[in-house]
Length: 107
View 1 (spheres, rainbow, N blue to C red):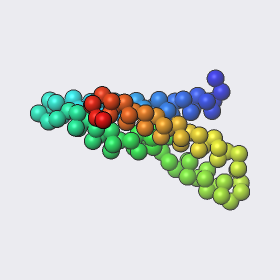
View 2 (view 1 turned 60 degrees about the horizontal axis):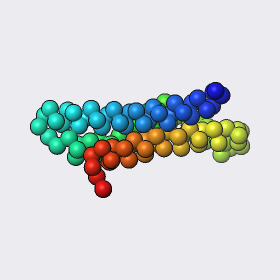
View 3 (view 1 turned 180 degrees about the vertical axis):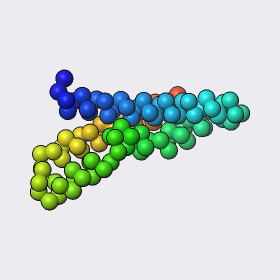
């Protein structure tokens, strides 16, 4: 598999896994502490959505640096690669959020 496609798939599934793992384990913690697991799971999923995507990208500095260089005309072809990685990471986080909504029984 091409290195770019590998990075894209990994970004998607890393953000998906971080969101699902964080919210499900947080709900387990809420259950052990006597709280409401479904509500906690939804709250955590909402809070973790952006952070899961950023963590899957390995931080945003490289992407922001690439966008800066594209704006000044240095590397126009690379912007599509980085934007694809950003979309894949946020797509994985959004899918994770939708799965958590489904698991929690939210309409």
